[in-house]
Length: 199
Image 1 (spheres, rainbow, N blue to C red):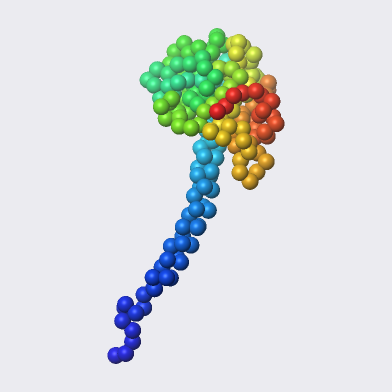
Image 2 (image 1 turned 120 degrees about the vertical axis):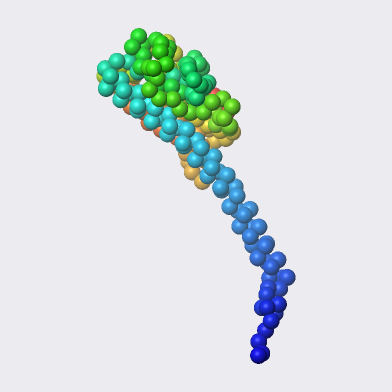
């Protein structure tokens, strides 16, 4: 029964070393790309969640024919969440605001909460040019209360630096027009012009 034994059909030590070296090179090339992919995904998810909240607040204002506001909060998962008065929209609340003062009169007025509590925010931070967005019954962004936000930016340790291989900023900005429509902004010049410190 001629033929080779199992031991004679295996790889040589040199062949195994070459395979391991190739695997190490592939991992060295792929690992930074995967890390960048994860960071970009996290920023995109946070910015898109906030943009969805803007659209929801605007829709609810038109549907309910009263002011609906979107404010920053430190505890979106708290039993009785409240507006923080801060400009960090890592956590946020959408609520009916009939007196347009951007304060929650009753927790039953809260339509939606989102974002992350302070302890879970990781490296993603947010900055805005105000602490609250209020939408009128016509869906337009109101100028009241004082400190009304129109621009919010989400970024990580890269700040406004360009995303690798693109001419777009790694940061994600959301700008809300007077008509109440929001858009994601990644143009570095536009984001820099906002003057929001996000790092």
